[in-house]
Length: 300
Length: 300
View (tube, rainbow over the protein chains, first blue to last red):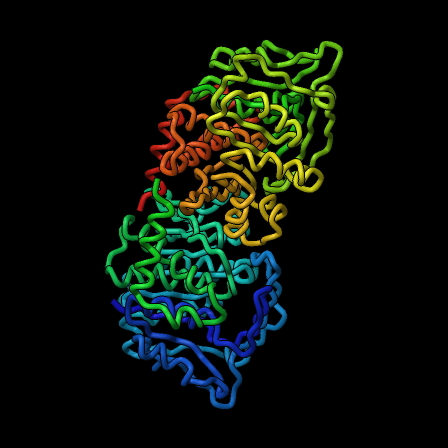
């Protein structure tokens, strides 16, 4: 089954206590595509400027990412983000955020994109998310990520699109802000009332929670001795989850649990390097091997 | 197999966003004893003042806690601690800390305490920990907890006693302070060089890590919808771990994993009430049932 993703494509300047990169490939849609394409074909919907080096994402095309719906605005500049992480990598400061061509982004899907059965709406404006979802002909499973600024500034639009999705990805602090509940389990459970059948709470290095009417699943993160750059971890995680679901073609509770584990594994690779470096290198087999190791380090 | 524990016995004043208690039973040795006695006989070594209501720990005696080595200083006052938790219960402020009779505490173990095979040295001065350990005739398994002030102020004494133990309990921030390493896995692994065969890193609501030369085990916390008071969670956790080991009489890697899961389950009960309220109520069967539920919410 193929996946359509809409989200940002960016140049990132990133600094962590392990080093820094400039003009690195980034953005939620690129991280997601690099991750999900390990499992299933991906249609990438987004926008870049004339400054974007298409040859640098040739590895994505080779892996089954269709970029026909990647809009190139020749006289515009690509979205740019710059961030600095503290030694405690859970804390970061955004130094620069320039929307550029993203500011007037109005995605138009072609027939191939419209026919995808799995949909991932990355953390962009909920009105844009809904306009993309409107164009998908017969979505079987829709997942959505969001972020604090949309929870605070576009709450009604966000609530509108949440009613139409199957799975919400959200991090722990966002879940607390959206619900006003400090307990993460209680917050996630109350999010089910907004529409999604599944809520996945991402807790970074502390793992994640999967909540549904059927119950709760808790899973730690894959233990890493060294983290280079956490940028894109959440999008890579979502790519692992939705990719796994599209690969299997199922979305029952048991499959969702495995998908969530898979998402954590893919994210664990992503943070071992800057930008897409690690996701570019790995194969589906590498994911499988690390999943087996994860079973070994979590079994009792 | 029986366990000897040395640690504090206290009156606690605690305030959380769920309520408050005054003059409540607390202290590391009491929490540990209440937890560990669900699994095995416990010898409690500690000191209280003449103001301590012995009848309030009669439930511990009934559960197999021997208090013959609980020193009562008739003209002294019991140790007192007072703390205020923020809504984010990972953050707390100590308002009052009065050592009282604890200041001159010099534990003397009788023959029954000396013959215990399992030893838990709760988070007291490492010189005191070592003086107790010296008195145990033939310890089979020694576990130790510590805290930030001893890491900062008594580092050499702490390093001395660490060389003689089997298992170190430490929380994530303490592991980082003791090793200077910001990555928790790397920090825990480097702690093995100080002597212990096993290092357990407690991460509160985020679960824990068990590290040995044989490898790593990661486990999430039991998911709770409501936490009343996190005081004593770490000591209850240690009580569940050491209690489980003493009950089984084994301490191989596989048993340690189950023990660590058991510790998390016991701690999950402890934080559902103030003081020893929940630990007083529950039985070994309640722990078993919640462990089974934990298997269900973590299986994939």
